[in-house]
Image (cartoon, helix red, strand yellow):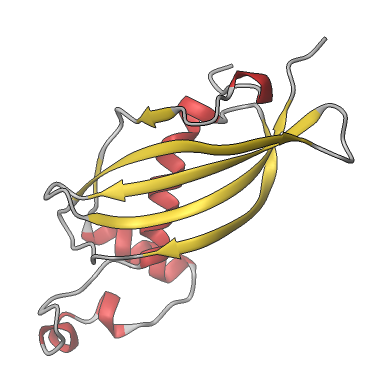
Length: 150
């Protein structure tokens, strides 16, 4: 199992994920289609040319999903019970087709679960940056994590 158990996380621990991903037009269009999001800012090149961005921008929820998804292999693969919530989400810079995203995860907090003796709660800080070093996605996520089996 690649993921870490609750006991293996340390507050302040930082994961700089090796996996990077170049976002494609297909990623953006398919994500919008799958989520029924018709926003022309994501889908209509002519509309988007008239915006402050001058081109289509990638759906921010795709970006956040990518940033968190990249972290799974290094942190929670097979050891998470479930997400409890996400807070402080921010998208400080847009993502364009062709941008390459890299992700970093920091462990902010951890505590024993009050209701599940076999689990603990870990607060993850996820940050994604593009190839220009600009932050494109940020959030804090609370995960219910398995404890190491006895």
